[in-house]
Length: 302
Length: 235
Image 1 (cartoon, each protein chain N blue to C red):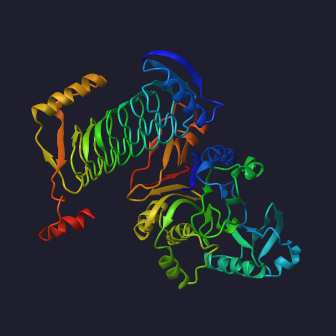
Image 2: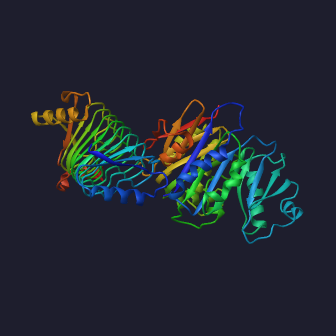
Image 3: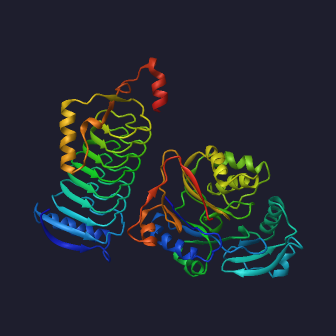
């Protein structure tokens, strides 16, 4: 099953919206759709430097900062511990997605069991195994312009933070996806990407969606154009929400096997698997619309 | 509606408690009526009630509302989620708002009226009864229906009546595309009388002559090697 949700506050400059709290409110209504893991991806005020987030295994002790910095010397600065690992800024000398991918790979190899869960100027990802209420204190502090959430009912692959959603579309900065469904040609698509030196954080089929879209965006495609190019490559059932630094996109498979509803007002866009989440956030008197079979569409935050 | 036995505030009650209350109320006789408030878009409300009961739900409900029921009369003032009135045997389901996918799935009898829109696969594998949609109907409406009537006052989505065996679909608005083996047919006097009665009963302003009728072409009844292309398309 799985539950997905998204929120986008329209406006050019104001990125101080309670995105985390809004996603939490919706996620609590979608909890029954999956209780194996939960996660939020929020696009916050831009940080001057790109930073990355690393989740460490629960049993692992975090190495001293200088040991982490030594894994890829001269690149990581401003190391800070987080609830489940650490975050660090990337040197601005590091340009290009594949330069950054090398750092990501080196960190994961140097810190066994670790996984890089986000990278970018805006993106902040918080995941937990179990119910979304574990993310309450983190969510309340997450302000920004937009974000997405996921409640997972695992039907394949492991249950751990690395396999929880939303997924960062590695190695591309500031892209995340939350997906309900199965991508049935995942292995074929993954093999093609691996042959081109892409790396993956998990064995979860959903992870590939953000990577495919991220690559199109890096080639200069608009999000809308990227979706129109990637969707024909995907086989299986899907309702997904993709978020980038500039906005949100959604898509639904041709058979509409997974639900996806939305409400759009002058001020915001809210998306969720089930109507209760939208009512809880916006009240009873709202006009709920459905994303249609094989429909994809995008919204810019400004 | 009969005399209202009680208004039940669903807030604070589990769905099991709500449904147990409804079952108990139904055992008080056919004129019993219940009003549910604060349904909060929750799933499985008013499921499995097999004795007559009048239910008014004030607000929105989630998935499978009024499923597996026989003989109840239920009116929902808001929207509903997926699987509205699934497998209902007889009775009446009315929705003032819109319904999600698979409304009236495998329904055997009775009457369903949705004044708003319905999602995909409305009346899938329907085996009897009538579904009247005031607004638009989504993708694959009437998919594999075996009996019964679906009336759509607005537009119909893609693959209307795909692979239907029997039954009739009536559409006033546009049809995005016809499903496999769904064909247009002429309205007969019996259809006009039935449609007119349905509109009058639901207080919908429509005229039977504005509707197109869609039925099964019955080419998928038997496999014919000379018609392989039809099967390729259908499957």
